[in-house]
Length: 304
Image (cartoon, rainbow, N blue to C red; front, side, top):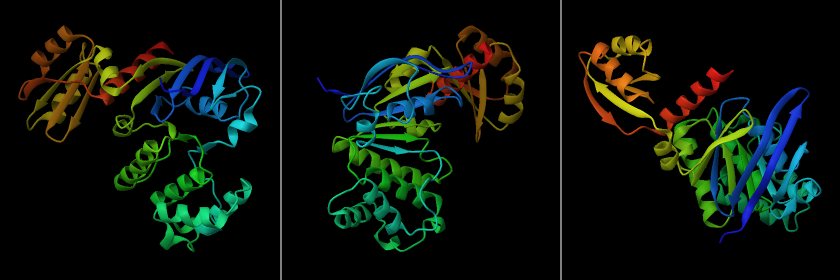
């Protein structure tokens, strides 16, 4: 059985009267890419910061990379790569200078060879003398990832790493993550992009500081109980407006000439389509992960 890179139980964190993480249990095997999903404020960033030793939990126990998260946060930090939502390197230093600085911080032996190696691997060699502040969003993220893995960590914690970058850069970034997973690097990554979540071996959905559901993407979709139909035709926008305000329809989204509707209430959804879906050709389709994500967001908003 694969050992756990992360194994924590009952994690709790409050900021004043606000409970941000409440009784969270999480186990991530070594070498797994685990996706962290949830609405803004669901506790993802706080959990990541507790796991890497930057925040002390108010309660709970467990290990990260075999070290106690309460008593050994310094040991954890030396073996973790943590990439924040915002670009956090020095924009007035070059690509090489930023990486050389990180190597100095980690007191790496043969740091010049290590920096040259990561420049080569991440295809940054031709940009080594370029100021970090002059890089595009995608190249900044690539540089940030390079800085995170330069010291050869055993665990990578990524907090919405591809926010604001284009589709090509996102795909290339994820290809790098999968390449490193083959080498045994464990990754926990928070994201709002469902195509990214589907690239994870397992996803974990948080709401109000608790795990609501977890498992492979296909399993999470199957367990949701959602029913989805898709209608095609020339009048999808008008039909979408009508269906969004009809009982039995939880979500209605237009994709070109197709309208996708979803709900837990099959009978109600079929009645709504029969009453207000005229002019479109309808068929039942498999729910997608984004359908489930929107459903879960709606459920949490209803509880507030």
